[in-house]
Image (tube, rainbow, N blue to C red; front, side, top):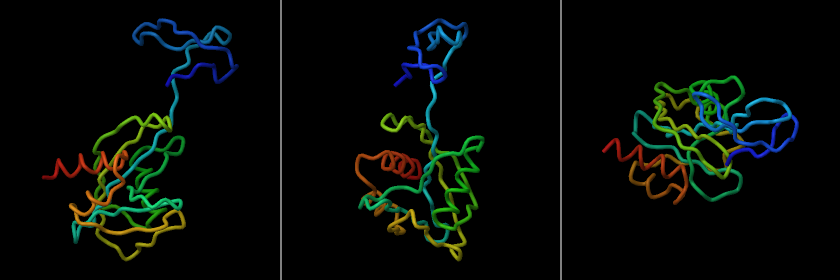
Length: 164
């Protein structure tokens, strides 16, 4: 969904051709192009190196198993956000971070970037107050337990299909 009004002055935007870009929202009041803006977030398939199990969590009173995830801070790169969110929510430190894929999620206007994160030292594992429940699942059990129809399921199934 493209923005309809200028975030600077509130004027209704119109499409205007910009060389090398095509039709871009334009503000006649500010005399400037307004490229669409959106949120960026990361999600991760956390894999225990010793057991090859996958971590799924439940949050905010919802009884749905999802992946560890979070939004990027302004100026933060994806890998830093992965490390920060993993540490915040689980206390864990990744030994491997691998980018899997991304998908734009329209309901929250968010570009979701998915990673595989391998952890091997579970000594510091402790979920924070954002996580209601967690469990480590075998690959087949994770596939059964993940929230059906969710973006988390889509990312997990793609990961599992690539690993088979």
